[in-house]
Length: 126
Image (tube, rainbow, N blue to C red):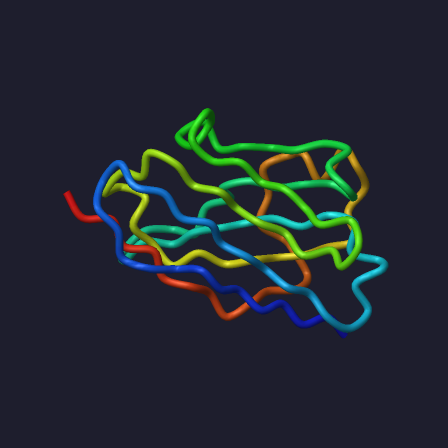
């Protein structure tokens, strides 16, 4: 059993920055792939970024490349999403996810992760 606890969501002005955190607990040792997803009202959930085991590899959604950075604390497996130059279209509930994917599967865009957090709200105003 794995638990994921997100934090860091807030309301910011366009152009601002936020850093989201996701602290895992439980049997996280097998979850070498972790990711951030987001879901805006009326839209499908989309994968924003993923990271494989201590920053060996990463994936980014095209819309966030160059603005968002995913990273991981190797000691406690907490992952972060640093979001710079935020835009109103980044407004969404952001979710952390984890799965025992291989390296190649982790870096593909996918949504069949086994473990999910409750989410943290990010609101960007123009």
